[in-house]
Image (tube, rainbow, N blue to C red; front, side, top):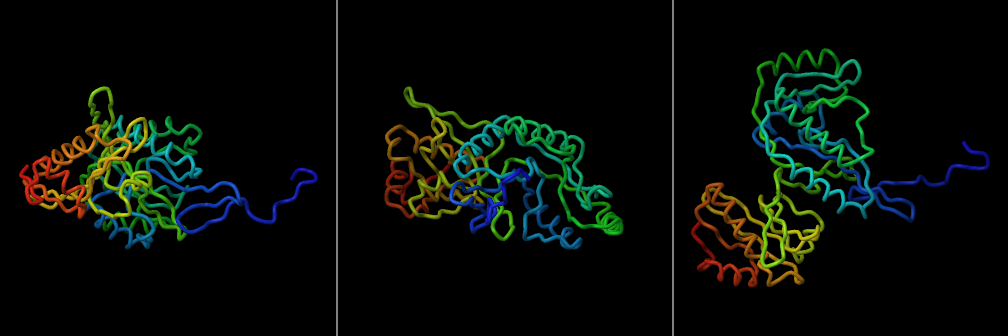
Length: 318
């Protein structure tokens, strides 16, 4: 301790609701981590194994870590998400096989599922690109792509898991990066995600913008939802110079694509953004096997817009 210096009466940071760390009177911070999620049905299968090893499956979902937890000032969150989009744009979706129980014992009491060499190399390359985008966050240990099963395990636990899961192998496909935020109760919940692969670049006249795909809306995108909470599994966001200028939300349901929301920012209306978003949303729906698109936005403005783009009584054939 420096001469004449004493510790402050309050800690520099303290937890508060909403997953943020509040600095005393100055800066609010958020704790994030970048994951590749396991989709169904593998997610449920792996959670069953995790429960068997005593893991708290409600704390966070099964995943592959791309960047371990880090704190970020709230004012820097837009920049962090922009970096995540940049990382995702340079990475194509890829497949991997998960299986084969491994452990970090005796160094760390963790049991995990290994990835096959090809999938592991793809994750390692993504990890390296992520480190390059976030200087100063170099890993303290060598990076081993894996899906954590449980911590605080013993050699006997690992041996038992290998007996139970000896033949377990599953193919998974990673098609997005998800930023998870740690909440006040220590749970990790999705904060924002972005699909792997380049954005679609659209242009009208001399104005261009990018269309990014995700499964959730981030806080900046929610400003265009006007207090609504439309739920869908396809979120398309138009950005110009990093700023959100439009959002479209759809939900796939077998042969039907449900249009839940479509809006361009006031400053960007009349520039073809809504038309481009709708065209991209319908194309993705058709690609997924939908034959019909249905208006479910519950908004007269959206309904009128869709009516000018081929929807009759709220329905359009794809």
